[in-house]
Image 1: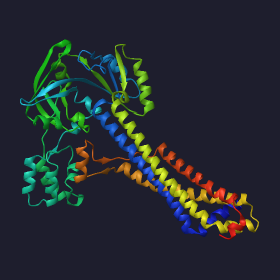
Image 2: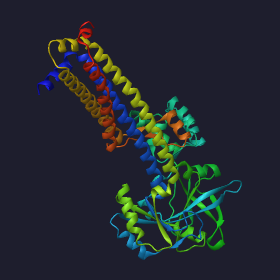
Image 3: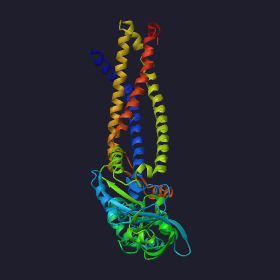
Image 4: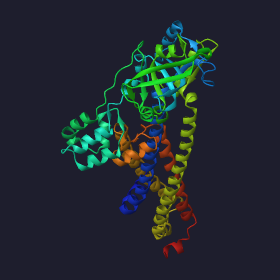
Length: 471
């Protein structure tokens, strides 16, 4: 106990030295935790976009459909099976879908598209496409009106031109891109919303109307009220062709999907492909989406379905994206490793300085009778105290930043947001909540501190008192 007290008092005998050493450890913990939180939060955000916009967490499919996505690899919609699935404790609802590919045309231009037949009401439990409707668009006509509006600042007019043809599902994103702060929003936004408003309609079962992705509508130069023609191959090699009125434009967070998606009412889509009563997949909305919960749910559902069907979970359906994220994660870990290396040299350099400064002090203590073993133990305690102060302070400050970031992710605006969008990314930086990664980062930094103690220990045990007194 006396050694502990002595070690603690020694820390504050030279406050500057203690604070410098603790600060190096503090920044090590802080940057490691915040960097890892942003990295994991970004991955989670991308996964959720893919899952909630397209695949869902679990799907029941024909056993051959995923490998060969043709209309012949479908299965009959079985209400009895649906009731069995809904009886599972983790299944919130079932979402029937019919998915295929077609050639879409507006006359002069054509493009291969993904045709998705959905039940608009049931789809609200998963992708909720109606919430992704384009409500505002910076069309050339809208920009012209903004340019002629004398009440709009020049900066807003410049940014409006920069974001020409951009579509928005909410006025908050439009406000951010135009660089309008909250204080001026009530004054400027009503006029901008009026200039950029885009009216969308709904699609309903039994009514031949479609929603199309925003990027696809721009490529085909189609708007609400225009007609889109779809041509494909139907069930058992029949011809599938139809023309439909565009009821609305949707903006999907995944650029690849947004560039090719066409939504039809489920029964209309089945009729187009001459596959009435058939589905390509039955997506499941779940209550708990943890990896363990999903695995257990897949196992239970696999025991219920017929032999010609299979159950797929989201990682299988997003295999390419998961592989890309895993590779990026390894790159992020390498970057963290480089950060740790820099920090380790910083901590070691500080300990080196601390040991050199106290060489004479150590010599005097040993000369008056203190055992080297006791001196080494006190020095170890001092370093552990310094490490503990730095680690706890870094973890505390990082916790406040991360918890705030979880509730208020960083949203980029203006020209920075435009750069993100050009690379097909949402201009948003999400944080991952405090989890097991938190402990590991602190353990790694603590291990670096313990390694740095080895140097002063070697110096103390190898110290020659006469030389130390002359230092």
